[in-house]
Image (cartoon, rainbow, N blue to C red; front, side):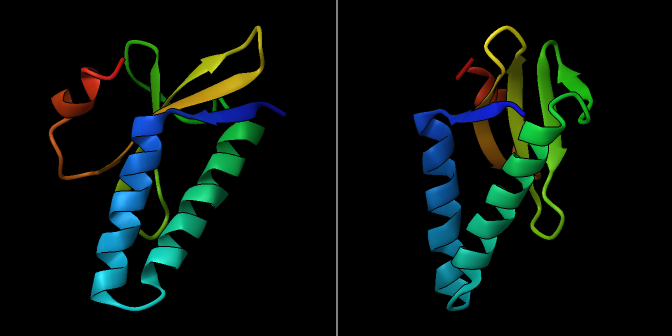
Length: 99
């Protein structure tokens, strides 16, 4: 199994979305962060299951929330590097500057 490395900006993405969801409904932010953790665990177990979307960037959509996790795979070190957790309505050019 691979290890996950969430880059600081990806952590900020998750935190910002969780705060927004909590403002809408108490406890919803916790459900969101759990959905992210569950999907990250899935990615670590199956790093190549999600298709390549941009060059070497894999993308996987959360099951309930309209967010997509963008990540790369380092096979030598067995690490999944998560660079963004963005709402699916956002322009993908926004996160490309992170890579």
